[in-house]
Image (cartoon, rainbow, N blue to C red; front, side, top):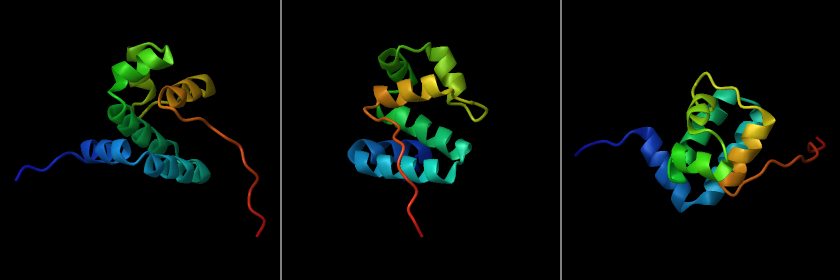
Length: 99
């Protein structure tokens, strides 16, 4: 039996369960781990038809989007919101829970 790369498996999971993708992104945003966020955004881009398709929907240059989502990427707020919007997602600010 041939094994599949982790990114392929995660992209398929996110495609089948968008709520899982949302939960994972929100957890990452709470932790503030940019490298993890970029990994999940790459997997989500794959789930949404690939970087080329997401770039078109986000009205971004595909080459720049590949760079933005690379392990060395550093997406600005405009790019991040455009990428998320192309996937039907958005950022939201919420109060921190009182403990």
